[in-house]
Amino acid sequence: MERPPGKILYLSCNPTTLARDLAVLRKTYDIASIRTFDFFPHTAHIETLAVLRRG
Image (cartoon, rainbow, N blue to C red; front, side):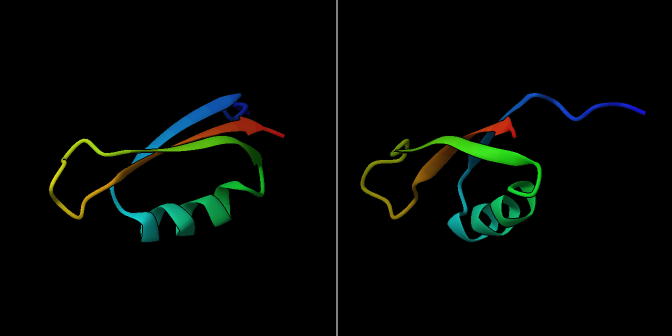
């Protein structure tokens, strides 16, 4: 049986799906950090990077 990775870097452009997926991933992973980025200035878009470590 394969072990899950020790760390996941999750980059998302959709806060709704990020929240949904983090709710599932938090069963196995702890959120080490979350940071937002504005790669597309002058638009409503924002990207979020979540760093997850296996708990």
